[in-house]
Length: 505
Image (tube, rainbow, N blue to C red; front, side):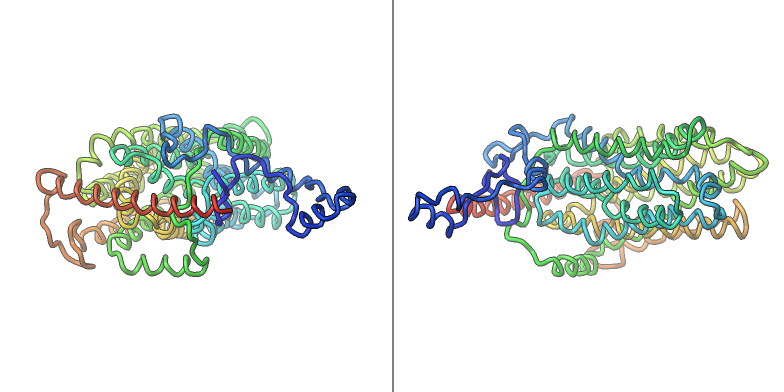
């Protein structure tokens, strides 16, 4: 496709184009052609032309857009898993990092806190641009930057530098949150929920794989090797996305002012009660999730368990097993229930597991095992249901909606890491677990305040039906179909306008 006004990548590497002044001079004075030839591209320009090149099989064609296959779905899940894993490699090895840099355990816990803060910053300031920029080139640029800067984490001996680079790389580790709205655009409507659940499961698995790999690698080698492994994985992800990630035009090809984009997030947030409800629930569940996995390291590394980093890392296998059930649960349960009731069901599962683990975990390891399985499975259920609900609000603002949701969720993770560590240091395992129970009960209260068909901020207008059946299901399908039709028509008109402008160029 021709280059759009928004900086859409050219299908072929660009060649130097003489300026109008140069062209006129060359035509008027043929004998001076050698003096007026434009200079050859610099190495940086050549590198950028390679990065921005789109293989033919990945180029967008409005008449025959790229098919979103199961392989594309798995590619996005793989890339999302081992990108978001960057935020969590430090969790099982905080005590090793404390010893390496000569700081206390509480001081070392600043590393995951900064990672979450950086991720939240990227969500706020980078992800909204996904509604304007071509996402293939945008994602590739962010992955390449993260991979290159990550080298500093592998080499530095300074705790301050390590903390700074942790924050910086976490800011650009937001590519999975650009992929999820893109899945909403690429996947056919009848497969959208399942496709989202596959990628969401990949993200959650990345959280747990990071702990597993970190525990195993650091048990037998230096802790730095897990960072070297991540360094290689980032470049592998870049190569795979460059080769196979389908292109897709901007959903707003006329462009939006950057500050207007940021302000519109607040507008969307305060005008859609469904989004606010989902965000608050996401905040509470994220707080519980990171609070549990961060303090679990301190519980298992101290008496009466005194487990090695390998054994602590193997606890991630429990969560991995529960996450693998996510797509099946979405296919057979979530798609058949009103999203709010799927969220409530997930929260009840979380409360059950957290109570068992909190009040038995100090004398039997079975408590944390049960808690890990129930908590991860319940949160996965709630997250998928919440996403399937909020992505139906404004199709052309999915990145901004996703930004609003994920900012609150990762502020929840930031809160869970900081509060969990502080409460554990003050009162131990039971105190930190009781705090998690309080957050989960708060999420259930938020769900109880507003029904799934309520148009206002509080109330249960519209009934209590749980299943998507009969008139409710037909109405939902009609609304979804109308929304998809309007979305496709609007995007088609925009693409046609951009194409006409490109042809005139």
